[in-house]
View 1 (cartoon, rainbow, N blue to C red):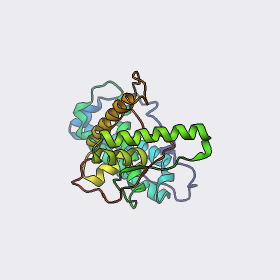
View 2: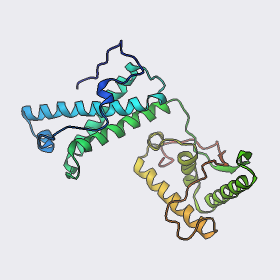
View 3: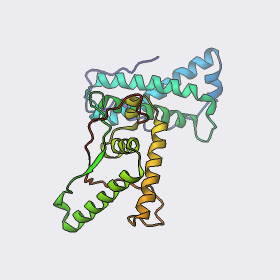
View 4: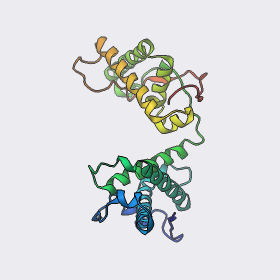
Length: 255
């Protein structure tokens, strides 16, 4: 497939035109039936594949450039490698799901989503490549006092309620998944990969975590009965992961 080329003399702070102009498939008149062209044979399919890959390169390039500060190596050459890899993987994923396209949006818009999501995934993987992911439990620690005594007391009280709720209504595995995703900020695709699981399985676990926590916090008076949204851990979290004896393995379950 066609690789992205970049002039080595270009200022590294300025994104290539193919990346800077790829926010959306603006101006594309959608001239063909993409599904038929891609699913066919002969020159029409070859042309459609080539144009689709170019579109994937544009979308992935824009996303990687936006996230380049998170990369261990943000140099133009390293960015190009990630862009091409993401575009190739996104294109493979799209072609595998070509039959699911229902025409609710433009095909090019649908295709952009594959490339953008895959590019973000590639960047997060590299960001966490040499970082250890530990599945840890929670403990309560003193809340920062800079918010003032009243807010600090409220924060400690709410954090304590969340920690107690987690101990009462979540399994040890659910607690550690919640800490990894909601406290440590581990990207869900990275954790899924480390655990040999899937994003879907982890989303299911996280949904169950939030459902149980919400019910418990409502029952204990920390959330109103009418609260519709999922319970969330405090942002200025006095909850700290401390259980270091559990490390992620493929048998541990989902991320």
